[in-house]
Image 1: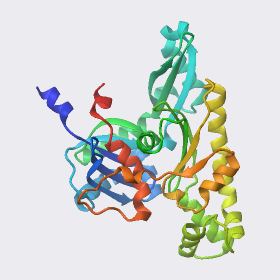
Image 2 (image 1 turned 120 degrees about the vertical axis):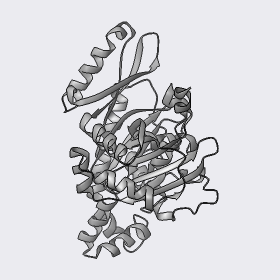
Image 3 (image 1 turned 90 degrees about the horizontal axis):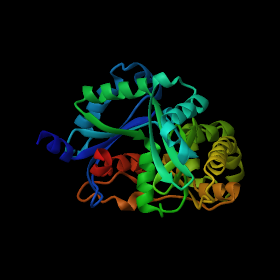
Image 4 (image 1 turned 120 degrees about the horizontal axis):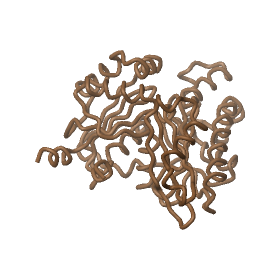
Length: 351
């Protein structure tokens, strides 16, 4: 009886990023938000806490739950999202005849492509597709110290983790439900400090990548290049952006180096997807999300550079806040990942 009760307990989503923590509870059948909140963090202190478990995350989770929560949370059972940039996900194929040696194939993949010894990683894998000749396997790995310190932080705040995943997976879950997610989709999630990139196909992330450039980088780029204060640079970014206008040339020139670095990483992810997972499927859409996607004209920029249709996704309408006040428009993108965590179906956790 205890086990059944344990499984039936509602879940909440909690997302830890380099710049903040978000929490949300959603009724997944109605996409009704029961409670939510966020707290901004010092990136350097987050990094230290993820590496050394110094109490910073625990204290801020407690503050978030105690002082910054709008609505209510139905339980303390958490689906946790961790920074995608700190995780490793790869998809590969092997012949069906080699399936009995799958664990060895995963170990080879880890040794070849992940710059951390396998003994320092938690590694999980799953067969996600099968033909007569081959099986396709998705492998995820994450440093043990990261997961152990996150678990310690949650426990210190009275929370119990039941599932942990990279935040890009939770973003994909929302996009799949709202933005023609049945199409093979390239996701570009531009956060404040990082950009995560992934290919979503048939409900699974096939490959992911990322780099340390985000919306805050864009603001700094404009401030330096145009010699204006950060506040003015932010206004230029979100009001003018890459759209046609008298300032377009200067703003585009300021943003070009960072955008090109993002595009370079995007092309690496596309190349890996095409070369390693070539089953004649093509990427059909590019969706740009995250707080850094609030640059007017950024969809057209990626369309022109990648020569494939790209647009800024708006999955927000899927969430019903009922009687709760909604976050202001500028803060909505920060809740996409945690909404995906909160909308995990229980059968996904307990399967």
